[in-house]
Amino acid sequence: MKPAPFGYAKATSVEHAIALLGQYADARILAGGQSLIATLNMRLSAPKLLIDINGLDELRRIAVAGDWLEIGALVRHAEAERSPDVARHAPLIALALPHIAHPAIRNRGTIGGSIAYADPAAELPACLLVLGGELVVAGKAGKRTVKAEDFFKGLFETALAPGDVLTAVRLPVARADSRHAFAELARRHGDYALVGLAAAARVDGTTLRDVRLAFFGVGATAIRARTAEAAIAIGTDPLAALARDLDPQGDVQASAAAKRHLAGVLLRRVLAQLAEPRP
Image (cartoon, rainbow, N blue to C red):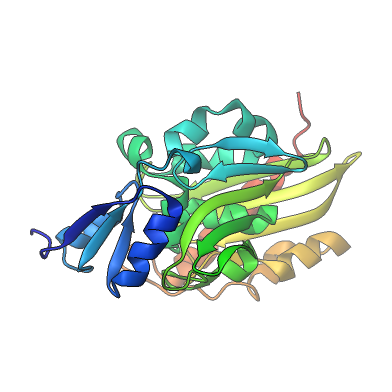
């Protein structure tokens, strides 16, 4: 299929993009376009105007500022995957990025676009929840910062208001005692995950502390498994507790029972990864 007719504007600044969003009630931001173009072609989305922000170099930075790593919204997945700053300061993101689609898509897809799209089977929202990340949003009233736990509202729904532009992701710099793990199960590498799990913890000798778990592909958004986390903290069985955290719906790829089983498999794998001693 071909998309419905639409207009095109190339933004010259973030402020220009915000102004264009304010002028047109039905406008969409074009960044990497790896999700947007598909929905246009299938006519699941039919905006009157596409606002191209690819010329905004200020949104391409990866930089450390104090205790935070900031990744601009226009940084390509492949750029983040190759970044030594991401590998050093946000190792969970580095673990997750190779699982996102295929190299051709990672060469064009952007960090900000993936997060703003908020696909429930996407890897990065779960990583942000686990890491306590923040989203930097610019709008008519200026800039604001939104915690990841407040950003993802529902199926493809975020805290972005009409006229808002996601400009950056902020992640706490990894500490020396931090541990991270990531796993997902898909029919083929690069397909959307049937179930995935991002995890972080601190290590105290041989003991894991402050374990944080976020599953994806099992709900309308990524889900913190807080009951399983609490079970780990007091030394009881997290697999039994996990049933109280997750209530997945079956789909064409897997039944609800299969998703619950796979979530338990990933939990065992990820806890083993977290416990592995560093070389």
